[in-house]
Length: 273
Length: 259
Image (cartoon, rainbow over all chains, first blue to last red; front, side, top):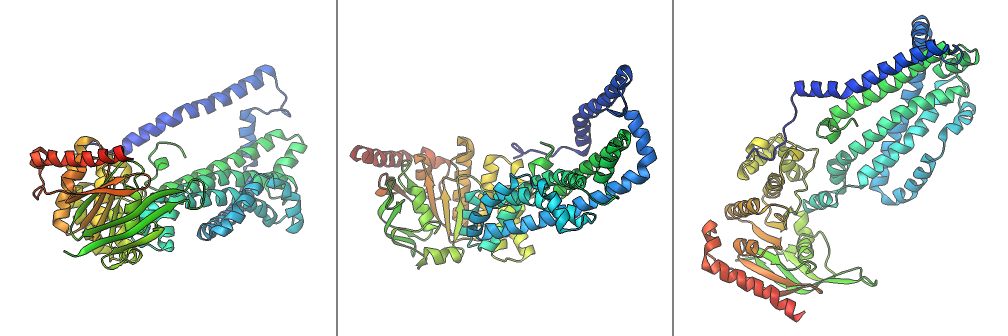
């Protein structure tokens, strides 16, 4: 009776697997930093072109009081925009899945808009909302996050195995019950893969739209100002904050994904999602 | 015995009015009595799956009527008279085995604790008590199909519609599953309509075998299987079993010659 049963790996095995998986990446990262430091010293690269990692680290320590609050300010723009865009996208996707005529009208439009560089709207958003408010940036983030999440969610809701639908119909299930018990759970992996893309997009969108002008408290504004003054170590320290933000945001969504979908392949450790 | 399913003058045309028009079924008449075990057998394209789906109201006839327990097939579906089992188990991958078996009961608004008790009993019936907290991907194909059968029987449907349920299983598992289905059929008062490609499977399981011919789908022959009940492994060695295999095979071959 036990043949053909796949058991979950134990906790100890999972930790060992994770170490095995992340060790090469960690070594490569440290090796990269060491090479950068070495090349900088050996070839005497000018600091205004590329500061060395140890300088960036020292500057980061000195400027932490400025760059970390700036990062937090920008992260709020990204998070607010992300939440608005993602929630609106899921709601619209649910509507289009329920009323297919809407879908026929909306989806091709969404695909087209998704392919346009929405960041180009940043100066316009600065006009619509105040340049210094978080809303001009959050608006860009929301629009950028909206389209991939909406398109993916719609696909997840619609591309359900025809057999599952027939099975539900054979039980006399209502369209609402089919939506709740089949379409929505089926769409979750699609939603999360779009949300993961959305985390990175939202941080990029927030920072880049700050390059077009924004609050003096914002990370993007800090980076452009420091770079203009040839304070490259300061700019790099801010970039370290930006990447940490992006990575943390991504990991947070991965953790939520694992909590929400314990059954899914990406949670079984078969891929990193 | 009362009639469970009555199919009268049913024709099914796909893509009507276009150049790839297909007459899947032509003028089908078939009466299925309550408690019968009917197999539909025939080559690909003979419309046997379509006929099953018509009984289950998953598709509409172009002409003719399907009456189930004195109602339209549509009303019968809404009354939850059907348990469906497909070739693929079609389990919902995000639900544990237990919650998969509970699915139809959930839709029928059966109370939580009662639902769980029924689902446990059904899993016991198909020998999967120990796997209730596993997910579908952790089970083999045969075990998944047993879960699908437990799910179909959980709400005691009047009619079990099975579309090549063992088609994807190996021969050994297949024979064991056949014995299990017969055992469940004896225990549960269900009428079974069973689509298959396999002659021995049809003869071993059924009280009647309906042989169908393709293009257009028609009933070529209906063969009474008078093997004694209950059927056991000895049945497979019974000389009468072989005679009936030959009869079904000849019916299938006969229509090849005429078509």
